[in-house]
Image (cartoon, rainbow, N blue to C red; front, side, top):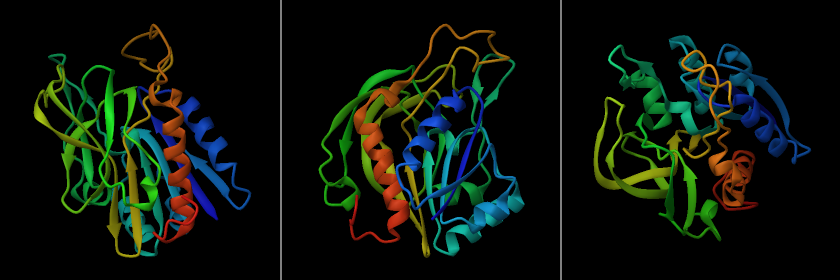
Length: 248
């Protein structure tokens, strides 16, 4: 199976995430992987069976979005991770804005990142224990960025967390207590998107030019065996081409 991995963007240790994802993909001898930092090689993405994305503030052009639509329409499966649905703008007053994604991209992904509180420990709860992807998964705790966002109707939530509070300095600062999706499926005709918001990572050089050196490495959910289990299940889901649960 042909996999295209998009690993690129800002404020994250993309080198680390790319390597970890490549190691997981290499566990399958039937997978061949091409890698790029963005969506510019859209013809190769369209031709792939599986698209895996780990990005932050990496946005496809209108033409590339059309290619992503065609990829999904032909039955492609898109494993979208962490900041794939993010756009980040630092304002002159010190706040962080997350302006609207293009409507077509937001519809494909099923959500948009708007804010997160400081990295914290929180509980992930299983929303749909009957789904094959969740077989054997129990509620668990992680220390990670808790992603908050705008969620489109039509998603099938598999994992969620419950949280409420404030998220300064984000423009979308106030969040009443509610359930927030952590992992969900979104159908697109013959294709599907599987989105998992966990997986923040950052090294000492990854906040440039905002900061010359970040004071420490952050690995967050990458230190959790359950997170790697979910990633492996996501890869097998991409290969399965059905929801019969085989191999999850």
